[in-house]
Image (cartoon, rainbow, N blue to C red):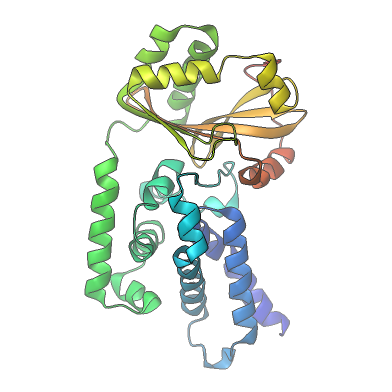
Length: 312
């Protein structure tokens, strides 16, 4: 392959990776899909490709759909033990992020909701909401009619909206203050204050420190507060499991405030928060080692600053 063709592909690699990540919810799988797209590009008769960007988008999207429809993926994702792979803010795979819809489409809350859609609905939702493709363009990408694209988009939006209670979206500084107060209450035993910081419809989802075979889900303010209080209580057994004393940093993961737990400079877990109307509406705890590799790699390249909690 000539260098011009390689350069042409590399110019769009970031966009393809962002698309694949939203479709698959996994950075590792997204990278594999992009690499497979490159191999198809390498083998293609490129002189017959009129619009390379459209061709590459079509190939990458359909490779992702093949993965979503595979028997192995269906088993993994319906077994109740799957959560999206969290990414540290600043990761290029999270782009684009110019509009509210683009930013929301990559939050852990929405990526988790997208698991309830069919592969076709998920693809149309992502292409439309995150990448602003027209229904005519989506129809060409997915080999469906424009009418089918519109129907998939309507169903996807309806299902996502049904699970998303709208409220006053918090700016980053306000959201951080809420999480700081939440963390202080969770580690000090102030259960009443913890309950007060949760919305009435709060949900908590966790992979059980990476050990649970199924995701742990909690609803209602009292149950979530009890779960969080137990989770943030330090014990010798937890320190042994983590590999030492933890330092907890406040950061941002997938566009929302998060607590990043670090031992010896390595990320061992993260809890991402969704803040609405000055309260915590949802939290996602992920500690499975296989889901943290890319986040940890990004963490090593930045100055983490002073932890909010040290020696936990």
